[in-house]
Each structure stands twice: as C-alpha cells, then as structure tokens.
Image (cartoon, rainbow, N blue to C red; front, side):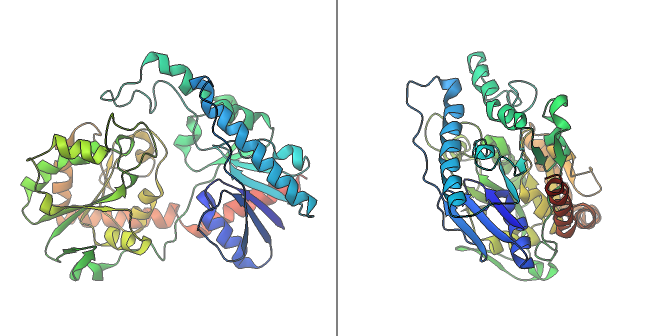
Length: 407
C-alpha cells in the first residue's frame, strides 16, 4: 500500500506506526512535514514551507483558524505536487490539530483520511479554569471556543478520526464520538522495562552523579509549566527535602511553553525559583533540561518515586513509559491520570492542588518498601496488559484495513 502521513513535526504521534510499516518492506511511506532533522530510514519526507503568520489585524479569536487555513493551503499545494509526480496514496493519516489535512480531500477526493483527534476545547469544566491560580478572563472565552473551528471542519469532512484515550474521546460532543475510534497508544515494552541493575550502581546525569544509596525522585515534562504541574512539584520540594536527607530530585524539561501561557516575565522555572528562594537546597535538585532518550529511560528505571502531574488534558507518553518501566508513579488525581492508574495498585494518586500531600505520598512510597514493590509490579503488569506495542499496531492495521476496504 501507499501511505501518506501529515504532521508539522515529523514523525509526531506516528513514530511507531511509520517504523512498523517501513520494517514490513511492503509499503511506500511518504510524510509531508515542515523541515526538521528527524529521520526514519525508509520513510520519504516531503517538506513544506512554514506559512506566513496571520496579520496583526486578524481578530484574536480567529488567529488560530487563520493560521490553520494557511497551513492547509500550503500542505494541499505540496500534495498537489506529489500528485503531479504520480503519487496516489491508498490512505492519508495525519493530525488535525494544525489544519494540515483540511484541503487534502480536494487533492485526492477518493482517498480515505484518518485524522488524529487529540482534544476538544472547552472554556469551562476541563483544563480552562481548572487551576484557579491562573484564571482565564471571560473575554477570552470566545478565543477558546474558536479553537474548535478546525475540529468542526475536520469532523465535517465525513471521514474518520482516532484518539488515544477514553478521556480524550469524552471531551468531544456526543454527536462526534461515533466518528472517532479509540486507538490506545502503546509503548516498546522491551526498551521501557524495569532494570534493577541501575539501582545498584551510580547514575550520572550531566555533571551530577546519583549514588546507589541515595533516594531519587524524578519528574519529566517536555516543558516546565503549570499545565504539567511544575509549580506543584516545585512547592513540594521543601517538604520532600526536609523529609529525607538522602533524597535527590531530578527534573527533566525545557523552559519553553507547550501548553498554556507564559509568565509575565522570564520562565516558569525562574518564577518558581524566585518564590522558593532560600526554602530549598538546590545542591540536591537537578534541572536536567531535555535529555537524550536513553538517559531519560535510565532515570525512569532508577527512580525511587516518579511524579507525573497534569491538568485535565492530554496524557503524556512519559506516563505510559514510566508505567512500562516499572516506576513507582505518584500521579495527580485528575481524569487523564485516573484512566491509567488505580490508586494503591499500579501507582498512587495525590491532589493536584496540595504540594504538601504530594510530598507525603512520595515519601510514603520511598519509605514503605512493600507498597513500592506492589505498585511497581502492578505498573509493569498494567503496561503488559494494556500498553503492548504489538496490540497497538495490530489495532492500527485493522482500522486501516477497514477504512481502505470501503474505498
């Protein structure tokens, strides 16, 4: 078969599927994307230029939609060039979030589209307004509602969608859910696996060495920001560091903004360090930035307690990989995390809004060996039952066969 993938940041959510297709040596795989350095041998990248930004006079609530339509236009032009060169895909798979797929039905009207439907925005009751420390003014509600313009256009294509969790599916209106398949994402259980040997030897992270006798608390996020509870883990640090003198904390993540808003000035890390000035021993806290994937896996495998926090929003791959690695995960008691973690069985849940309670939960896991072993074992068993890559790819293949058979 001939596959066309579309995502502005190759390979996006399609890393494992593309590798699977290439490895089979049965398919032609073409991927339309903005230029980047990522590479999967056997997949042909077709770059498109980043479209011009919306003009400043565009209404603030319409800027995202304007940007999406510009991107849709550029991607369709790129696809038309492919068509003129003789490429005709059997299926098009991509992410609907940035509007890239919206005009492809005009290029190949007879080709099925399978779009990644990640999240349906609400101005109240889900992520917006969840954390009252960062309120959203009423005059910003129209902008939040308007972010669903691409969602609605994608659904109106009368094609098919997929989403990775039941909770993400539930954010969509009932009338839309029947058009979206729940396709649970998997992880590589061979790579993401417990490794007891790492707990018996020093672990080096940059210039910092974690000794075997030290207790390691880990936290991972693409960017250090409130949506992923960075302010909460930071406010838990004084309680954690006072609780045990042998405790070290490694925080992985960059200083950008993936979700939500930037602070009035500086970065969220700078904001929190200023707030906690003199209250934490920074010699026991390492801000690692973004790290190599193998170092990240080693941190999960070595961790004595792994903290995962999020607003009611999209669950990170890192949560899945932490469970597969047999981490003792202490997660926020929010809907996306509760879909993965049963308290006391394969992890622990703590209030997102109570740093002191979070610290107590982390210390309990570190100090209660029987509890830690139970939830570590439960985490791995959960991953083997629900997160196996083979199951994920088999379900993907079945859905693709179903859609292409309709053609």
